[in-house]
Length: 85
Image (cartoon, rainbow, N blue to C red):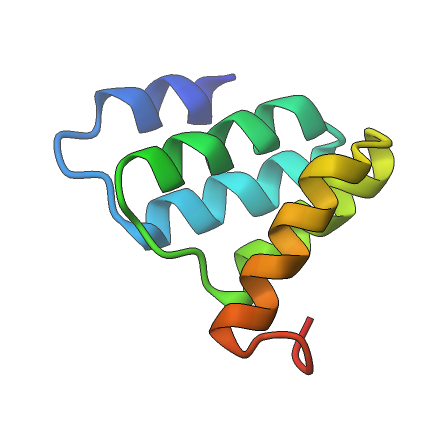
């Protein structure tokens, strides 16, 4: 929670900050929070890299979110990540 508060007060959020916090949330089992951060990342116009996508696909699996998993898989295919995730 401290990391989340710190993240939200960062004046310039970047893809590295998002990636670190998403990865930490997934490792700690905060899957819903990781997914919310992913949605915020995309809403701000950042492109998720293959490492973030890999983490979010795990989240979709654990949350049994087939619809989101399919959308994210489609994004992987478009970006050419399918062989890396």
